[in-house]
Structure formats: C-alpha cells, structure tokens
Length: 516
Image 1 (cartoon, rainbow, N blue to C red):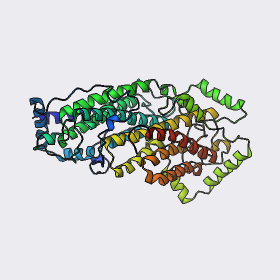
Image 2: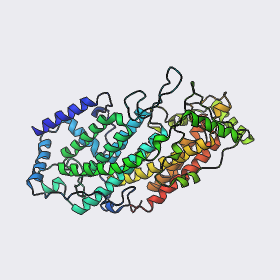
Image 3: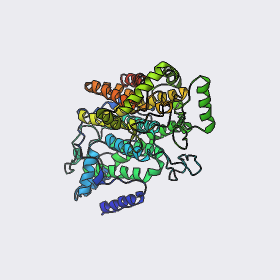
Image 4: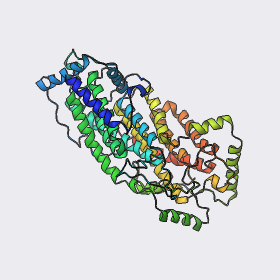
C-alpha cells in the first residue's frame, strides 16, 4: 500500500508540472549502459573543492546501525517496491542508472534550449526584458543566451562537484554498506559498486542540482522537482540506496547549493544588461577612438546582448586577470587589413561550398538550441561515457570544462564591448549571412573563444582526443567566417584568448588532487 500511495503523489506532482515543462519516459534520450566506473575514486573526499572551505564544512550526522528496526524497515521498503516493478519503473532505473551527473547535465541542456528564445518587440518598438521576479510573465525568464547558458552550466557543474567531494568524504568516514550487502534478499538492478552508500551520491547530485536549477530557471521548478522525485524513486527501486542514504544526500546537496546560490546572487550577472544611456556611451567611446561603432541591425534596433557580462565574477581568476586577458584591438575599420578581411567574408558568403554550409549549420547553435557552451557539454559527455568515469570524476571534469567556458565568455564579452567593433554585414550590406546575425559586436568571436577554452581543458581530461578537440575548435571558429558573421581576426584572436583562459582550468586540474 505504501508504494501505491507514493505513486499517486508522483502522479499529482506530474499533473502540477504541466504547462511548465514535460519530459516523459518515452521521449528520453536513447538507452545507455549503466554506470560502471573503472575506478570509484573512493578518496575523492580529499580532492580540492571549488567554494567549500573543506569537504567537511557541512556536517553529516552518522547513520544509524544497519541492525536497527528503522534500517530494517528501510530495507523492507526496497523489497516492497521490488515485488511488482512496472515497465515504467524499469525504464526509470535504466535511465538514471546511466549516471546522475550525465542525466542532470542533459536536463540542464534541455532547459537552456527551451529558454534560448529572444523576446519579440513591443508595439512601440521597444523590447521587453525577462524578469526573475516574475518568471512566468512574457518574456519568460531567463533568456538563456550563450553567456547566460555558460554561467548556468558552470554553476551547476561546480556545485555538483563540491557536493560530491563532501559526500565522498562522509562515505569514507562512515563506510555504511550498500543495502544488498546487508540483506541478500535485496536485488541489485544496477552494477554493484564497492563505495559506501551513505550519503547517496545520486541524492547529493539531485539535491544540489534542484537548488541551482530553481535559481537559474525559476519558472520550471515543478518540472525540476519531478526529475528529482523520479531520480530518488529509481534509486530505491534499484536497491542501490535506502531512504536514509537519500535523505542525507539530499540535505547535504542543498546545503552546498546555498553556498553557490549566495555566490551567484553577488557575481554581478544581474547587472549584465545595459540601459540606453550605457549603449549610447559605448557608441560615443568608439567614435572618439576614430572607429565605426557597432549598431544593431535588427528592426527595430534591439539592445545589445549582456554588454556588462564582462564584469561578472569569474571562477578561475580575479577581475584584474580577466582584464589582462583582453587582447589587443582589432584592425582599424579604415585599414587595408580590415578591407581585405571584409572582402574575404564577402567571398565566402558569395561562393559557399557544400562543406562550408554543413560546417556553418553544424556549429550554428542559435535560437532554440543549448548554445555553443551546451554543444561542448554534449561533446564532452559523449567522450566521458567511453571513459567509465565515477560520478565524482564526471562532476569534476564537467566543472573544469564549464568554468573554463564561462570564464572565456566573460573575457570575450569584455573584449566585445570594450572595442565595440561592427559586424561585416554592417560595413558591407551586400554580405548576406548563411545564418543569423548575432546582436552584439564582432570582435572577438564567441564561438572561437568558447571552443578553444573547451578544447584546451578537454585535451587534458581526454588526452587521446586532443587533436580532435583542436580540430573541432578551429572548425567551430571558421564556421563563423564561412557564415559571414565574423572576420578572420575575430576568429583567430578568439582562439588565442580561449586557449589562454582554458589554461587556467588546466592549472587547476593539476592541483586539485584528482589527477587526470
């Protein structure tokens, strides 16, 4: 009876979530093998966290003995679930069994794609702005553009990593065995792991992910909570955890999340949009330098995308370092070099090859997608699956990737609005792009900067793929030249800047105690 009452609660939660977001079993990603790490990384509790002062900053109470009536009742709960497992429940176990970090990253990418929709203009020609205090009003909050998305990926991944470092510390401290090691009548529907079960690593990931995603996507809270409920239900059905394992993990994850929420509320991202006065000042500054300022080519003119994102607090370095990573200026708009680069852009769009068109569209990652940062998350996840990483190593590697990509976005956006350089289509209206025209300055290329940062750290994490990552970054960069969106200088300098940022993630990877 307990099981069926719980099922009704899940159904009720699902009904409440309609209108926010939907994700049924039938439309989940293709089935993947269950996570079976080559190494469980049982010493991950000694790894260096990102924000936590130590793995033990938040206390986790010692678990009750496995001989107590309460624990025995929890074992019986698993048996109750396992007596009559439905097809849906089997699917849940298989889905979440592929890896909690992977699945929550997929959920985050889904949310980014759904919110990557720029608002339509008002009747008077002005543009409305998403409002975090009223996320369900039009335009929906957030507009998950590339900088916002990069920041979202970084916060979720970094928080997951810190939460898991803390969880692994307490796993080793308390060393509570998995339910099937206590009671031979418990079926194990997922590969057995030697690591202790308390607190549950899956619950820690769910707890921290829920809190971070509720902050970043406040209009989707019911959907996010439903994913966590399914995740925890799958763990009990699988026999991997008893309820107290899950409760301790969820509580720890939520505590760690609050530290990242506090950082996020004070990282200056909330002030990244500009007003008309700031926009005009940027134009004036460019003119005073003797340059042609960037202008919005949308009708009516749309305010530029997050012009103050370059002032957001980075993860891998301080604000002075971020400024020092700003590259020298682009070629002057009146120079022969700029004329030559402009002619090159025109030649590419006037004479597109089939291969160039393929490259343009493969790397476009525009409206309605999970953005260039999300594209690199997808690439990384595909490769990490082949490496059989533990959950904590998955989290650590995605944290390194996404901190590099976020910080690359910060330096890139600082550069864009410092120089306020016009797009090729502005200087030569005869240039018709093969994809949309981004509504922000040209120099430097965001795709190039994001991609080089990602390729740099991924080359250390998966060294046998280093040449492939470098080739992908260069192709992503050139896609913007082929498409008529960027000059060669934008692309080449963006690659250099992205690599410089990525090297900070590499340096951290060499000192966090995890090895590679």
